[in-house]
Length: 230
Image 1 (cartoon, rainbow, N blue to C red):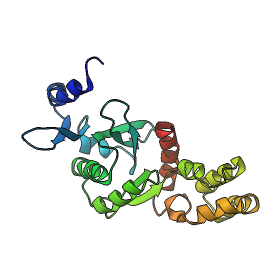
Image 2 (image 1 turned 180 degrees about the vertical axis):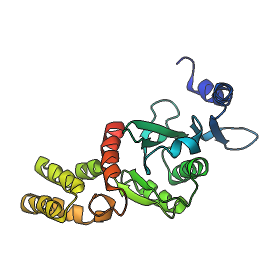
Image 3 (image 1 turned 90 degrees about the horizontal axis):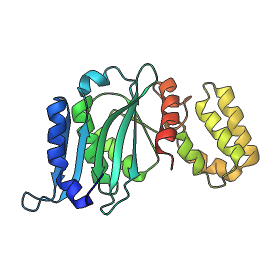
């Protein structure tokens, strides 16, 4: 709130230590360049007893990042879930350098170590960021990695509103008849956009084809849009 960015980063360790005095379940990790100069590189933290909380949530996690504005830039990475009452639940946070692959790997490893382990089958939803695509399978071999339909629809080469609507309806379809109907609308109105869509595997964005938990995936696509839209 006050003072310089440099001073704020210098206070991170003492700030996290103070939070732990209030919440014994609070966990954090701060990484620096070396023991000598201790220049900040990245950090990770979460609140509350993670394993107990995670058992009460749906087996789908939304991960995403947003750029920080300030002298040192960087990216805020987050993991988000939804409980059984459809309330958004923020799980974990990380401040890292510009969302590079190593930063995503660090974040996912810390998340896995503290929440559910690396051998649990669950769904991850993210944007089609190539750094995330590289990091997820390196950390979680059992994870089903899917993409937010809202982001895909915004990246269709010819952005027609009718195409975007039809694509999102196809993503939410639960029968082959409904899926084919919406895809045919795209075929008849936007062949170029259809070719872009066909280049993305159906099982990464369609509720009909994803091999796990279609209902919660639909919720999470909506959640991703609300939290990470620019």
